[in-house]
Image (cartoon, rainbow, N blue to C red; front, side, top):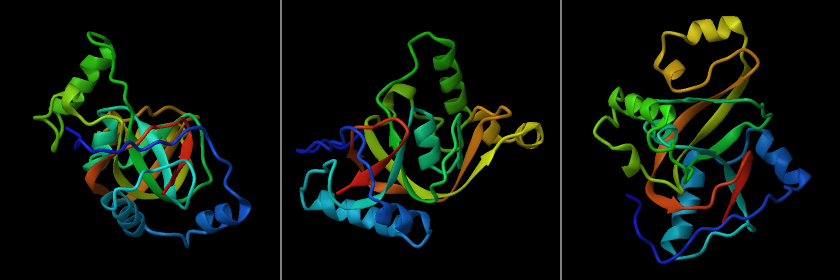
Amino acid sequence: MPKKTDWIGLVEGTRRTDQRTRDIINSGNWDCPDNAIKALMQHVAAGRDIFDHGEIIGKAVTLYQPYASFMAVNEKLIETRSWSTNYRGTVFIHAGLRLPAHGSPEEAHARELLRGSAHLSDTPLENLPRGVLLSCGTLVDCVRMDEAYCARMEDTREYQLGWYSPGRYAWIFEDMQQLPELVPFKGQLSLWDVRI
């Protein structure tokens, strides 16, 4: 369960990042996950709110549970999306608020994936944290999937944890690390800025 805190992290709307910041981030010379995690946790420890303005410490992507937790425990290091990104660098994993509808095929599938997990098999779906930043890693590549790529992935755990289909994109992560504590945060669509 997420730790109860006396502050709420808010990120509302999308903000346009200035060209200089985009160039620094996309150059690959920007902060590593260790530095971004350290900056975020120092901000939280000081009791400061998280706003939609301020210094960018990385990007974030929202995933629904149980996929966000699979990323956090390094059981999933490829996120599959219908769209590509040119961004490479620090990305926080945000667990969205929504769970699959009760009794739906999606819920049954999510529970089956959890039962097969090396790290989360004892955790009920409804007990996974939601509405929080869970982990942080480095997005190192974004690959457009073709039939050969999908076929290579078929017998892997990653294949079970993603949507592999020609024309979709595989976002490949490295250095995924769990945050020392869960940080409440409002998610967004697309790839969004984490600012402190």
